[in-house]
Each structure stands twice: as C-alpha cells, then as structure tokens.
Image 1 (cartoon, rainbow over the protein chains, first blue to last red):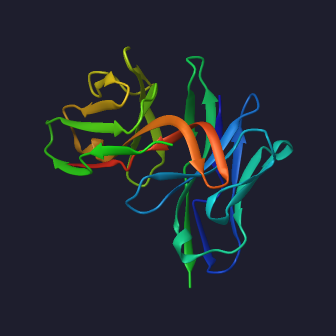
Image 2 (image 1 turned 45 degrees about the vertical axis):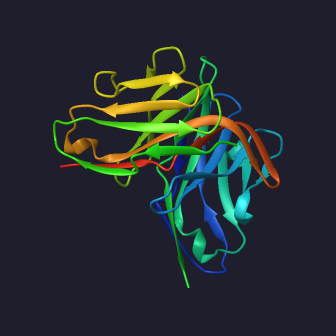
Image 3 (image 1 turned 180 degrees about the horizontal axis):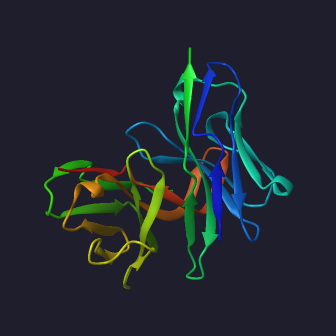
Length: 116
Length: 121
C-alpha cells in the first residue's frame, strides 16, 4: 500500500531564508507525488506534481521538489521564504486504483511559520 | 482547469440533525471525490462519486451516515446524517481535471473546493 510520511509537523524559518519540508513515501511502483498547500481558512492548492518526466520538479511561487528514488524522498524546497508562504503543506502520493482514478493519500501535514 | 464551489461555506448544527453539502463544478467531470479534514488533521477520502453509479466508500465510511448523490457531470451532494460532535470537520470535494498554470500543465490532477466547515454542538 502507498503511504507518505512528513518528517516535520512544524517548521519555522525567517523571511528570506531557505525552506525545506521533508517527505518520504512508500510505493510498490513508480508513484505520482504531489505537494499541496492550504492557507488558513482556504482550500487546497496544488504546488507541483511529479510524474517521472524529470526528477527535479518546479512548481508555483518558487517552490520545487526533487524525487529521489534511492531515498524514497520527495522534499519540497524554496530558496527564500516569504511571509505569504506561511501555511500548511501536504505531501501526497497517488494510488492508482483499478477503477481508473487516482486515489490520493495525504501525509499528516507540515505547518510552516515564517518570521520577519 | 476547474472552478469548484461548495455550499454552505460553514454551518453550525445541532446533534442528531443532518446537513447536505453541495459541490458544483464549472465543467463536466467524470469523477468527484469527497474528503473529511478533522480539526488539526490531514485529509481522509470518504468516497468517490461517479455519475450514474453508486458511490464507492472508503473503509470506515458508510452510505447510511454519508449518503452521496451525483445526478449529473457537474454536481454532487454529500449528506452528513444524524450528526454528533465527532462529525465536526471541514468537508471538501474535489475533481480530476487538467491543471493549467503559467509554466505548468498536468493531466488527471485533483482540484479541491474551498471546503465546508461544519461544527456540531
């Protein structure tokens, strides 16, 4: 069965410093992996998606993630944090169900705080 | 891309009553999904709704408690029945659609609605 583990429940950074949110996955085959962001009182927004086309995936708002099969990791990074990045981030793996749709399995989430 | 709206955005309900949540999409989609996000928790899939067939429920969720309708390709409802305080959660619907954003293009990606915040007293 597919699963994801987000290694940090809370991450705190200063504005302008790099962001690293860690995610490990478990999959019996080559997975699709996602990062979603949830701002307070708002819905989920997709940041990026890995589909095996390239191991380094660029997303919106300057975020990127690197797929490392040997480490079963899909960590999310951003070179310079902005105050508006403060939110909850979810690492997600897709379990392709035989019924033809992609069942999403969510990690527990990482709350990112950005300080001035 | 897809634009999803949900009604109501929030509600406060009494124990033992039922609430029906509506999900409307601006384009025709095959699959719609309903998720629950309990306070401070991650998202859990409740069921998958395919137009014209019975919804498929995940382990731990039953039709009597969470009946779902899918009358057409742009609309679905989720009812939370005989509510208790443990049902207080955010309920989100999602659809699979092509994702288009400047510089990004993905197929078969789930979009999420804004959610319905339910409080049961």
